[in-house]
Image (cartoon, rainbow, N blue to C red):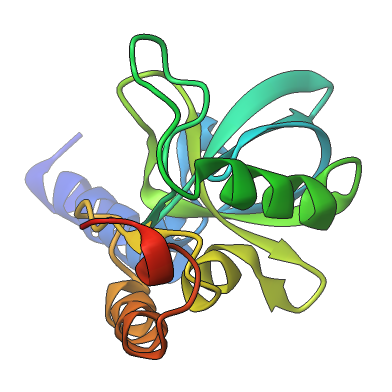
Length: 167
């Protein structure tokens, strides 16, 4: 191959990369940026187990942190049971849409996602009701400003954990 052919091949590859934008779909082996899944179990207020592509996967909600109820070595925290109960009632045994973050898995191997039940943004619903605090971990910070506004409003209104729990 001569220099001109190599240059043309590189240019063609660059144009294809820009036009196809694999990073907008999760790219390569990571799969699509969104998927539908069936919730098989609610672990706690911010973690669910789903059946996705025939496999069971734990999914951690992006941008939120609910009080602990099942973490080994950690006592049940204020409002944890209520957050967990709400999550059970809302999503358990339902079909949800998962929108994955830029970083697709956490250090524990859980999928990281924004979770939707129909048009309801579950992550935001937890914060709005005072059942979760915001937890921003870049690069998964797409809705951090929105979630922070919901948290501030919940705290000012004294909703949920903001009514009885110490910071």
